[in-house]
Image 1: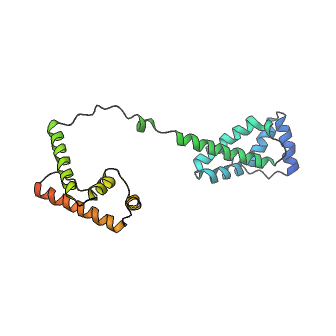
Image 2 (image 1 turned 180 degrees about the horizontal axis):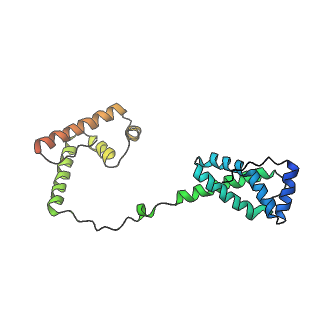
Image 3 (image 1 turned 90 degrees about the vertical axis):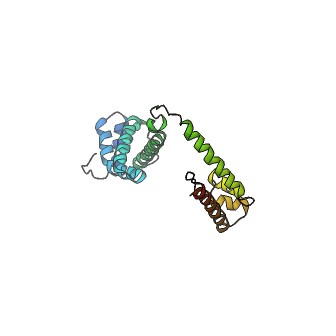
Length: 196
C-alpha cells in the first residue's frame, strides 16, 4: 500500500501528467497513481467494507490503469475515471467470489454409505405406518394440514393464506395432532416422532 502523502494535483498538472503517461512516460503514470491511491483505496473500502479486499481491489485497479491509460479521454476528470475503474474492479471481484464455492461442499469425499440393517428398516416402516394411522384418526382436513406443514415444509403463513385459517387456529390443530401422536407413542412405546 502506498502510504506517502502526495499533494493533490491541480487540473492543469493532472492533464500534463496524463498526456505524458499516455505517451509512455512511466514516471508520470506512477505519479498519477500515487496522487490518487488513497482516494482509490477509500472508495474500494466503501464498496468492499473489508480493508484486505479493498487493498486487493486497489492494486487490481492500479494494474487496470497501467494497462488502459491510453483509453482515458479528457472529457472527465482523471479521478472520476479512476473511481469508475475501482468500482468496476470491486464489483467484478465480488461476482467472482460469489461464484467460487469450496469444492468440498460440492464434491464431498465419496464415502460408501452403509445400507440400514433390515431390522432398522422394518422398525422405520412400522413407525411410519403407526404415524400414518394416528394421522388418519385426526379430524377431517387435519391430516392434510399436518402433511403440508411437516412433510411439504409449508410455513404457517403460507398455510394460513392457502386455507383461510388463522394462525392461532392452525397452531391449535398442530398442537392437538402432536399431542395425539405423543399419546399413542407413549402408550405403544414406539420411537420418537413428535414434530416440532
